[in-house]
Length: 209
Image 1 (cartoon, one colour):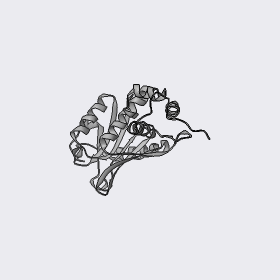
Image 2 (cartoon, one colour):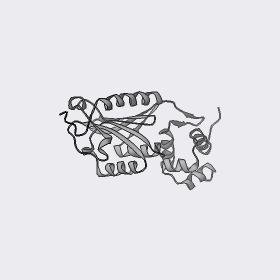
Image 3 (cartoon, one colour):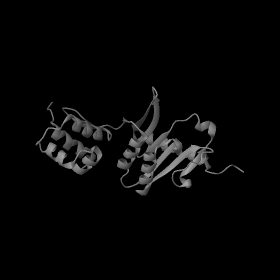
Image 4 (cartoon, rainbow, N blue to C red):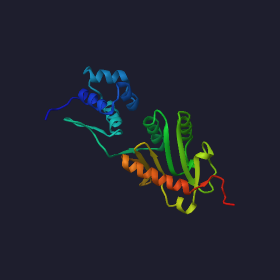
């Protein structure tokens, strides 16, 4: 089995994703000129640069090895913060789309997160968000929110659904992490589950009287 060099690997990976060099630069935050030089064999990438490139490809399910480049149908991606999740939403939905957020609480969001949410909405990305009944802290259009029953909300974790990704908020040894499962069928199922709870939930401000 022949061994591929990094230039061949990057070109093959871009071909699988139908990315040009600028697309890879945007997703990896490595300059286009650096990618051009690597693919032309003019330079060997530093370890930090190589990690950025492989991380960007792995987030799209493309794995590179010395002898092959392959696209995985189902895989996981870890994010260190909710802001990183929002940044991935921005890259995943460049032309707009819908994001479903289940069991959220905007009161816990940082200013940076709230600002990014506003930026995403301005770019045409729409949000539907379920929150705890009685929570009136809204960042965005009130029609984008629904109240969930307090008892159900208290036993649930934050879930974010967009494109073919389902992201769960996990607490591990007092450390907050976000784990994305990337799979078309699973994301479709979770969208249906969200829609069920959305349709059963109350409009924000509806006290049932």
